[in-house]
Amino acid sequence: MKYETTIGLRYLRSKRKEAFISFTTWISIVGIAIGVMALIVVIAVMTGFQDEIRERILGVNPHILVLNVNGEIRDPEKTAEVIKKVDGVTHAFPFVSFQAMVQSGRQLSGVAVKGLNAGDVQFMNRLLKEGSIDALNRKGTILIGKELSKHIGLLPGDSFTLMVPFGGYSPMGAMPETVRVRVGGIFETGMYEIDNTLIIMPLKDIEELMGITASGIEVKLADVYKANDLRKEIVKQLGAGYFARTWIEMNRNLFSALKLEKIAMFIILALIIFVASFNIISSLVMTVMEKQKDIAILKSIGAKKRSIMKIFMIEGVTIGIVGALIGSLSGYLICEVVKRYKIIRLPEDIYYISTLPVKISVFDIVLIACVTMVICVISTIYPSYRATKIDPVETLRYE
Image (tube, rainbow, N blue to C red; front, side):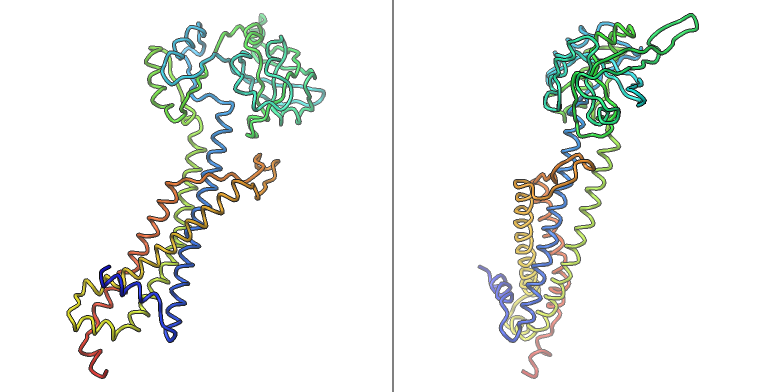
């Protein structure tokens, strides 16, 4: 071990008469540790929320939406088969979507109707709270969201009226048409807007009612993060007249807001570490003042300015390392406890999540630790530089 390191580490263990310096050293370590711990916990919670929202959105929505410029796909089965051949695509199936109104007794509500085949929505089995997906195989049977069922007071087996705009034609032109449907199942995605407005109806029923075979193709992927690359490949395979939108594009504003909020929280909590680093500056300044005689002796026996700086920078960096390690470990343990034992409960009627979601990212922990170390190194520069300015002659003249 070089003498600079030996002396720097020895200065951390102050003598009894220098107990206050030792106390400020511990305050510095605790301040850094608290800042790192808070930053890791908050970032883990925000990452958990972001992933939870993404999972809920992708639970019922397509990863890629393939549409035709004409508004309707004439040969949906053939188009779906072409898309399925693209490497990375797991499912591709036609759908029809339109706006409608539902009426049950005196309750009236606007809804978004999506037409799908029962075999294409098996991925929704985990979202189903009551009833069965196979109910879509029966004519006139639909699936509705949990919030919509509560709003208009419907249970599996109940019937209600669905008013379809432009469902019929008369000498005066297009006109609304009403159809009687039965609730075959109730699903819950956890997203209020979807659960309060979405109705899933058999594709064949919509084709008979409106004469539309398919308004687009829904595509599911093995890796949702490859959506942009696979979108280009799908459009290339289908040729002119087709275009596609990814789940990232369709929810860009939401995820951009979450990302911006995460960055803002990182900056705000990083300021806690920055403030704690001032304790390092004050601790080192006091150490320099206390150790003036030691510095003078070192310089008189040939120690260079660079070596003097190293001594105090090592002391400050050690404080930063210890604080960052304690903070990282405690932050990780808190996140692990919250994640495993689910000790923080949330009101489901407000957040639609029963417990606080936490996702621990090793990259985030390493990044936070590195940022902490950079701040601590910068904090040691001024006190270390001041130590090199001590004049050994003036300091030792009266000793």
